[in-house]
Length: 156
Picture 1 (tube, helix red, strand yellow):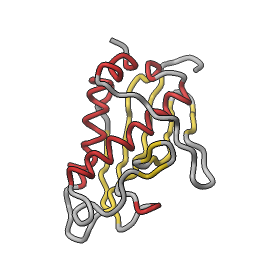
Picture 2 (picture 1 turned 60 degrees about the vertical axis):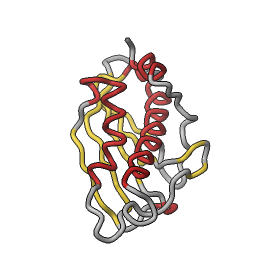
Picture 3 (picture 1 turned 120 degrees about the vertical axis):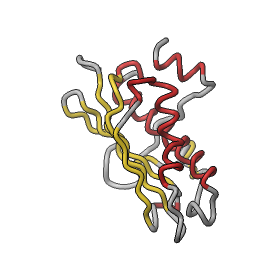
């Protein structure tokens, strides 16, 4: 089953690729590596989760915010590569979690994205990762993700 078919079999559809909110591009390709800029939990330009995890939001809501953010990252990958089937492997993901004082379950929150990557890409979705607690994120979102992806050889 292709990665695109797995996405569909999970009942998921990708949103339109999110537009940058500052001076940057959604992705940069260098050789077979694709670097995805930070993505947040938004749908069609509207933020769907706001606040700090462990205070305003539960860790479960943070987990869901990470999943929504990942779908935006996948939309950027599809836009840059032409298809998720061009992905050879997910190399690395960095997840930032806006954390209430004393909250230390950032790895659980970012598992929302990691678990979905493995569900879609299988072994190719296993990745190096950092889950970092921060005081604030842009637009008061609880999660921001960035990814590095290896594409199959050839042009997109």
